[in-house]
Amino acid sequence: MTSMELRKEFLDFFESKGHKIVPSSSLLPSDPSVLLTTAGMQQFKEYFIGQKDPQKDFGAKKIATCQKCFRVKDINDVSDASHHTFFEMLGNFSFNDYFKKEAIEFAWEFLTTKLRLDPERLHITIFEGNELVPKDEEAKKIWLEKIGIRQERIKEFGMKDNFWGPVSGAGPCGPGSEIHYDNGQEFSKNKCTIKGCGPNCECGRFVEIWNLVFTEYDKQLARDGEYEYKQLKYKNIDTGMGFERVLAILQNKPSAYETDIFFPIIQQIDKQIAGLYDVNPKPYRIIADHIRGACFLIADGIVPSNLDKGYILRRILRRAIRYGRVLNLSSDFLIPLARKVIEGYKDIYPELGDEQDNIISVIQGEEEKFNKTLEKGLKQFGKLISKISVEQTGNSKIISGEDAFTLYQSYGFPIELTKELAKEEGFEIDEKDFRRALVEHQDISRAGVEKKFGGHGIEGSKIKNDKIIKLHTATHLLHSALRQILGNEIRQMGSNINEERLRFDFSFDRKMSVQEIKQTQDLVNQKISENLEVKKQKMEYKQAIIQGALAFFKEKYPDIVTVYSIGDFSKEICAGPHVEKTGEIGKFKIIKEQSSSAGIRRIKATIE
Image 1 (cartoon, one colour):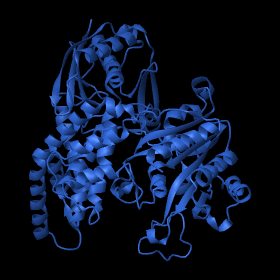
Image 2 (cartoon, one colour):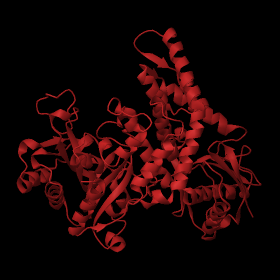
Image 3 (cartoon, one colour):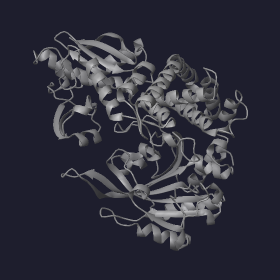
Image 4 (cartoon, helix red, strand yellow):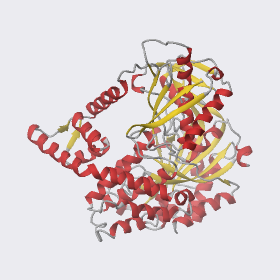
């Protein structure tokens, strides 16, 4: 079965069961508390908690999707048989319609009837329960009595393995029942002989292919600062099938890298160095994974930077470039690979075809930028290793944070890349010292003659007049407007306000167009004309972040912070002061947009 056929089989099956097929959402989530879309349920969060009506918006309470997802927590495992940064998740969802019995029956029917997987190779896990949430006896009973799974093929696990969510620390969540596929002993590392080897054994023989999450709880922060689990008003279903993992099984391949979604990319690499994939597949697989992920991130509007989503993109591109160096590939080897990715996915995800020129341009720019310093940086790293080897004795050899910071600042090495290089040589990095050096550098860069005032530098030791208060409030509107016009990856990098103007620095890798500047200015003035109320609240820092408040200099925030909300348009942690209503601000005008430093733009604006 091809990748195209698998997607179609899944969506057609659930459509036949009364589900509405909904397109994938962007990798840029609407939920500000998470960086990227990491699961199929994220676009439906408000339906799970009853804030929106799926019947009204979709014409159905049962939905199925093939969702684009991106995770970096397993990036060090990329190149093994079952981990990727970008991946597709096949999912079916029920909002107060069917529950555990139907979800389990649908999954079993699809796997054994439609995909014709051997039922004897399917093993089940359920939630074993704890002091906060009881054991999922209901799911176990369904598997035993309705499906006929034998007791010995059902295992119980705790929160880590069989309780899913919430994505952002609080919100809808629930116990999960996972379906694992037994690839056979030949897939296990060192031919595992552990008695009772089964799902979640580290040997790799069993692979999780489908997680059925029974979303029946709402995790919220209690008054004592701990989390509690309350029953949701409505019970929901959220499932996620690993598209790449199932495809490898169906195509009888040892990993997804040999299937029709990855192998064309690997073959493209092999044109330069034929025959090495079977000898050393790791660099091939990392490059193939990262270039695919980069294409999808750029297509959704992300550009390389040193912050948030942009940092993730820069990190995977530079990691791919470094592994290209391991394989002695040409300096511009990523471009033909990107074209291969676009060619393979544009019919399913048209945004890749629409953004092809931009994708190629961004990758080419990052490749050229990093190639200029990569060789010098690797030489510097080699010198460090030699020097430390002479100076330090013992089993543990440490690269100082200062040296790691030099590689980051002078040669563009993400700390994760330096860690990876160090590990290959048997070294460790003093990460705490690196973070200290990074913070010191940021403080020096941002401080200058400015004084920090709630995240916005205000000249002088006190608030001088009402105009400064108005300009201060306008910076909040400007910040939210930029995120809406340019993308949610925009982050405030500095601000300075005096009686004449505001100056606002933000993360962005290119010059704003005349149209974008006008759209931003118009949006700020629109919110001023709406005369929105500015509300002030005190709350725990953790709760503020959960609620989506933007933070600046977050490493310096106390446990209790002040949050200013401007209607539903802006929410930031800030010390104030602000106007009571936006109508007091006056007419907002951008007078200049310019570069501040690499990856940072600066806007100067005033009010009339």
